[in-house]
Length: 231
Image (cartoon, rainbow, N blue to C red; front, side):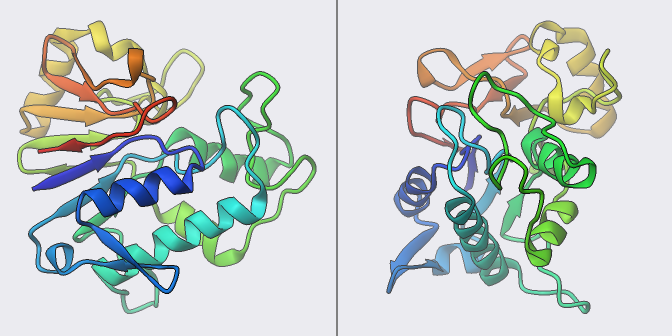
């Protein structure tokens, strides 16, 4: 089975609860320990990005770094390391990059906030702190933007490629695809997939919903709710 978890936005407790409930990990002396079902290939895990940046309140740097370290450690347990000592991005646990991971890297590179959400600061570090541990920065840079498994397409933003009117990557930012049934069908035919699962667009009442004529589902449901998709 495939477990797909949408936008977490620095809610470590919610992520831990879902990982436990889905049989992906268990706690061992306060640390996340991968289950044998994931190691043995019975469960494929996909996180759709936006692990960071609290939506309702700014979540401190220490808490966000701790969350990323836990996710990295769990992925290392699942996938192992490559010849260069980097965590393998593909394997039983895949973590995709979202627009907030991309925005954080741009924030550090440019020394200014990239994503704004009302009065809630969108950064790992507080205002005017543009630093990240090197291992965290390198991992965020390596996150893939999409993956295809079992005839399905997974990405943070949506199924369409290219840039939007603001020059942003549609795979990370696009929300207009939900009503573009023909364009989505063509994109799927080109990729050889039949269905897609995405995040990025908060769903009404915190429930998974189908879009683009039933061709895809959106799993961004964890702002006011808690849940994941099991396929």
